[in-house]
Amino acid sequence: MNTRTQQLTYGAMITALFGMLLLLNRQTGGFMEEMLVYVFPIPMAAYTAKFGGRPGLPVLASMSLIAFLCGTFTSVFYAISQACVGAVLGTRLFHKKDLTRTLLLVMLLSALSSILTTIVLASLFGYDLKAEMLEFQNMMTKMAEQTGMVIPEDFFSTQALMRLFIISALFMGAVQGYIVYVLSLLVLRRLCYPVPQPKPLSAYQPPAWSGWLGLAGLIIYQVTFVNPLENEILQSVLQTVGLLGYLYLICFGFIAVLQLFRTLMPNHRKLAVIPAFLFLMMFSLPVMILGVFYITGHLKRLMDQAGGGPGGGPGGT
Image (tube, rainbow, N blue to C red):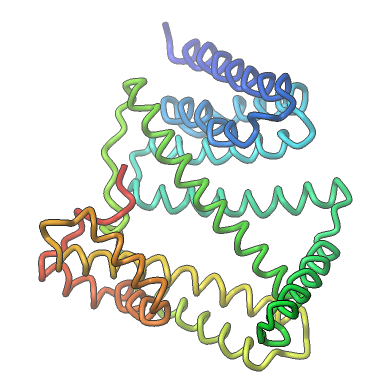
């Protein structure tokens, strides 16, 4: 069988499988939608990992058409966005790109997909996010008054709650991307695809400039939180950028702390996650500072010399 025929038959099979998942979700009244979100990328990832990204474009277009014909109103957006994520993942596997960077890219795309689909669905259904945030603000203010808690005036402002909503959607999307990545690799290995073993996330060294950029975002967040700007749009943009820097430093700071505890507990490396998590909860600011030094490479070199090594960090499958 020639390559062209293989592409056509395999693409038809993959598209049919994708349509079957959509019909299954529709027949169950959307009951399985939350679970199928993690499965939607796998068919497209399998095709592009075998044939590459360019032959996968017609298959992606076919899947998008099937989604509009067989999917529910809400599943259309999830299915198409996750199929695109699967296409990117499979294409990088086809070209044998670095798996750690592939993981980060899939997490980023899933996070953007999460926030975009949330905003799109909210606008299509007439769901007023600002009114919902205002209602939540009133509820939390009343609760604080009843319990006698003293909170900052702008802590439960509509803008602050909206920023937290966006950040939480981005964070949950990133977690979803990680699950999609791990699940896709497991399925592809079971299908005998030549997928290499991924390196742990601790072995990845991000650009040093990103650490200083994250620190700048953290400083901007603290400054604008203490002294809010009069321009609400600029305040929201700076606060969102600052929160992204906060999350970025927290993630790599936790990896640094985990590596340090694993160095101190060589005989109980798997249990090191417990004190590392407690340290994160109690001393978030020192963890972020450690994250800066870890990203810039200084702390990572010291830990590698001390025996922490890259082999025990999170992110492997």
